[in-house]
Image 1: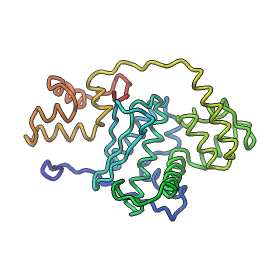
Image 2 (image 1 turned 90 degrees about the vertical axis):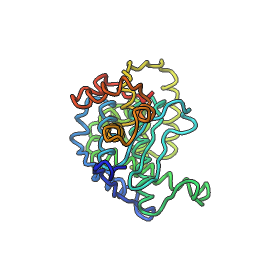
Image 3 (image 1 turned 180 degrees about the vertical axis):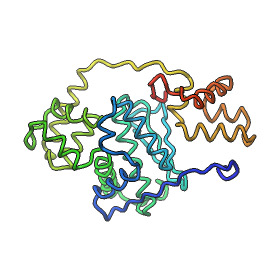
Image 4 (image 1 turned 90 degrees about the horizontal axis):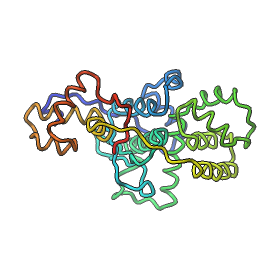
Length: 287
């Protein structure tokens, strides 16, 4: 349909191989997304960080969706290895935007591995559970490097007095806030960077889980139907649907179904996209 509509869609072309170091793959992914560390450290909060990372992935040629109503215990993210336009789905029940960022980059690594012919769709995967855990470990470490580069991590650690294995919840939270990521993602990065042993990492996770359990649930903001649609489907897909509707390639009923939006809201959605007002509520939960 892209050809029929005359739309040029960027083609994701960053591959990865399991034979290389995960750090090398992570660096290459970050370079492809074009996010400078100075820009990342200047972001206002985790929600802005999520929107910026998502936009960078979409501009690189990967559709990003959010899906509700699926328990986190079942899945936090999925990748659709359908080229030339692959997709990532993020579970919107993940309340912390920093956690969504990690899931997004983790799934992007899987797409890069598929491009490198080291991974294929689940139905054709022949790996054992042990072998698959090695793939997951690679994706975890590559995603960590992409989000928190080693050089920047070392620079930011200088201002926090913590010897190896002396990282407690408070220190990790302080460092995580600088990169706009979750403390759990930062602890994972410190472990992969050698600043935390596996034993200390397990102890830290127990302390972190206890801390999280002590917190009161936080209520999110109220999103408009338009912001919910953008949160779920992403701007590239929304714009593709609107282009197809304008070209009479799909019907209004089709557009409403694809966007999960009442037809009387579609013109308002179009207007807000044109004016730049779409997403002004700051809520991007995808529910």
